[in-house]
Image 1 (tube, rainbow, N blue to C red):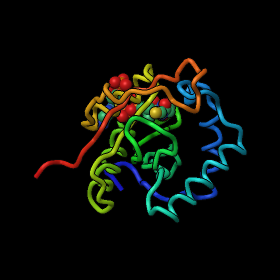
Image 2: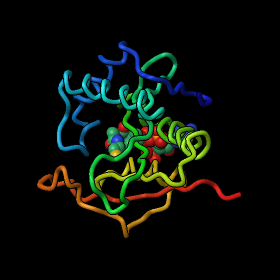
Image 3: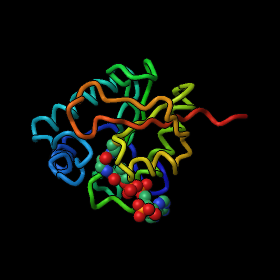
Length: 173
Ligand SMILES: CC(C)(COP(=O)(O)OP(=O)(O)OC[C@H]1O[C@@H](n2cnc3c(N)ncnc32)[C@H](O)[C@@H]1OP(=O)(O)O)[C@@H](O)C(=O)NCCC(=O)NCCS
């Protein structure tokens, strides 16, 4: 919970609004493609299996009782210059943009990562032109790590393959 948001595990009622945002070309502008409803459902199933195994994942975010998107942690499943690591990520429906919700949720998730979950560092990365996502990384105090920028190995022929990297570490003291 934060002042305005509920971060929680996923419910069946989230499937329709999640499929809608994954089908929205504007939400998916910085991904290689939009998702079909069955791809979106399979994504929720993978997230929920991850929670069972890891005890963390991409939390569903609810605003005034309405599903808005996700913010959370994920073990990156492909090779990057960072080596094995946990990443923080976010995706919201367009109605929920421009209100600071992603920033508020991400601060809460970092507190969980560096508190109860005990991680020593968390990374975030996005395609180089996704300024809104990069702005969230900056607002939550992550450090730009240009030395770790990489070409996404799963979509090398996509225009957005080049990814920029940010890193967060626990607050000192
Ligand atoms: C990335 C994404 C979550 C960012 O959403 P966002 O609304 O820009 O980010 P926030 O929720 O932190 O809101 C910040 C904006 O709200 C404004 N704002 C209003 N009230 C605010 C508040 N109380 N606190 C902070 N910001 C506030 C800020 O000024 C900022 O506006 P600006 O972009 O005009 O400068 C959203 O664009 C998205 O879901 N994109 C599609 C998925 C995606 O690309 N995910 C990342 C892949 S790596």
